[in-house]
Length: 372
Ligand SMILES: [Zn+2]
Ligand SMILES: [Zn+2]
Image 1 (cartoon, rainbow, N blue to C red):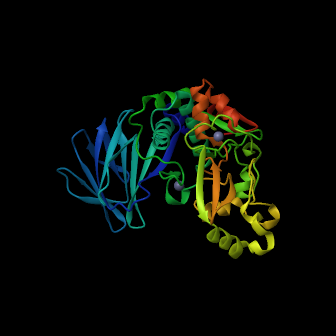
Image 2 (spheres, rainbow, N blue to C red):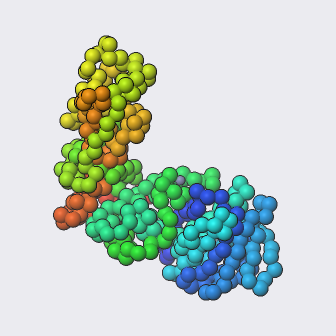
Image 3 (cartoon, helix red, strand yellow):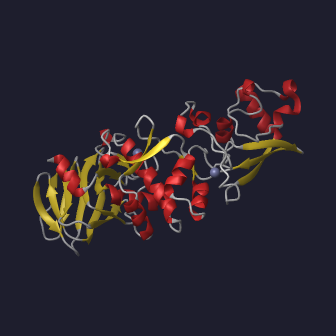
């Protein structure tokens, strides 16, 4: 029975909404279609165009106010659309926030004294909202397809991440940004449909971790340089597609005193011992450590300390300063967004782009695969 309904309505996700805020009161309207309002297990009213439902916290219960009805409280409110292609508008009143709209069903309950919203949403609608929230407009469709493929893979791989909170994934970058239903870029809907049910798996038939960063600087970073464990599909290689793009190069000036005192305090690396060598670092190929591994200075720690765009930089002295000449933006592991955009513009397909950035992977339709 369950598998039959999944087949009819497609894969659904449970996404925690507005998890950044502590919402205590909200007004909800229908944007498209009508909804049945369930209080716990029974229908208490309906939400048609023009009607407003207000929900607030009362002890550990949800207080329901619908125009013309008495106010009453329940443990859980469910808004179930009567037809497909329905959507709701949420306007948080306390605190007052910008309104957002979401497709499909909505569940509301009280958790830790605030309203918790869960969008029970068709996978395609969810992925469309994520791709727009994370990528914005104006990109090539093949690029949107790669993003859809990665978001879908991520969603299925991380489905248990928020299970203790009563949903699967949150709407923040902690999981995947999902700030609204797809609003502006219709091309994204097409990209999601045309890659429907496709995910990225490794040669052991496991969903991969789809890391990406803004710009790898011309060489992707081995996962082990960032997180200490190496992942076969995330090994380093030279990316020729991003080198002339917007975020390919950067420089930064740091005073020699600040630079050397950090190296000294944290790692015991002193100029008296190594001389000017401690300022002179050449990183033609990506490295994990500053100067030499024996000094024990991980580049990722320098990046954090000095708020650098990437770990892919060389250094030299200029007067009283250390000049950092860097490439790329982000951790550099996995897919390089500016490189992938460039590939799409040059006519590569989303599959070619995914296979370029992830090693030893396969793209499969999970709905037809026996291991899901
Ligand atoms: Zn999360
Ligand atoms: Zn790149």
